[in-house]
Image 1 (cartoon, rainbow, N blue to C red):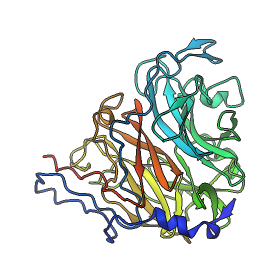
Image 2 (tube, helix red, strand yellow):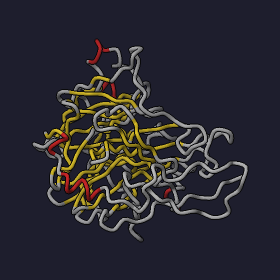
Image 3 (spheres, rainbow, N blue to C red):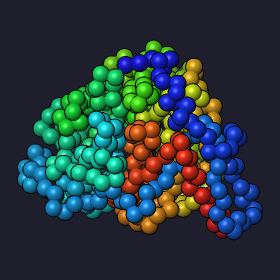
Amino acid sequence: MKQFSTVSFFILSLALIACGNKNKSNQSYPDKTRTISVESDNRLPSWAFGGFVRPEGANPVIRPDTTSVFNCPMRKKTIGWEESDTFNPAAIAKDGKIYVLYRAEDNSAVGIGKRTSRIGLAESVDGVTMKRRPAPVMYPDEDNAKEYEWEGGCEDPRIAVTEDGTYIMAYTAWNRKVPRLSIATSKDLVTWKKHGPAFADAYGGRFKDMACKSGSIVTGLDGDRQVITKVNGKYLMYWGEKAVCAAVSEDLVSWEPVLDENNELKILIKPRKGYFDSALTECGPPAILTKNGILLLYNGKNRNDDEGRDKRFNAGAYCAGQVLFDLREPYKAIERLDVPFFRPVEAFEKSGQYVDGTVFIEGLAYLHKKWYLYYGCADSEVGMAIYDPDNPAKADKIPAVSH
């Protein structure tokens, strides 16, 4: 488990090759009084990752499977555990392959968030063609997490690995009352030990029953491996949905939220009126130490009202942004994209459970000097895109203003 000073500078430098623009921000929000008639290029600053290219004809890489069944210990019967929707995936490289842990919903109810979610596992040599296990690897069971997971299940995983090969999963335990950011560990990605809510022990249990989601543990490149690393002597996790907060840990299991001078949760970034992230700023894949700072890719949700939203994007749409935190002051944001680097553009990203359009990023795996991004498409399928630092592409274009 490395300190950030030992992370390979050479590989990190490869990952931060610029797309050609050295400005601090990629584009400013346009004057709302004028109409832009055509899409414009989206030039990323040198500190950002991207652009990410969707391989032609490859997506979606994981779809629902009505033939896949599982003997559910909660339902006490055989169910089609991934027959309705498969989305919001984590990803990690292992032994020359990419492994994707994805959220799968059964057909036990109708409506977003009303069915039971379980986490499936797929593996791929090329990052595109997936070999899926027939049964989920994480699910609500007769175990120590029952009070937190019945009957909503296990949702939206993010995954990272320690230097010694222990996999840490941050996921949402959903009992249909309170969503809780929870932790599980594994040595093989198949058998998982659940440790319960991440914040259960912090401050005498003050945050045990707080609604919380989306944990992005800080990682770095050690040679060709992306591993969990310490920052200022402790493990660091960015987390949150309505805003980005932080937490620290000594053991990667019990986490302590970072508080401000008023003894409340310290807010690092929050939604911005008039921007693509005007409603939510929700953490994405594990954050990455780079030579420029700590890079967090996150999910921004657009507001629904015309006054508060970014009119270039659908009301309610989820697009992906990036923010850079200071290496020495990891709670200080020093750069932030003003427009998304990745947004719903394909039909499968706009049609499904979430019709306003969603590219919900949660998985980012490093393999063969490329970054493989995995994301949920409209809460229904899994898509992927690739960033090659040696051959950087353009980010998703910025659409015209809609009046």
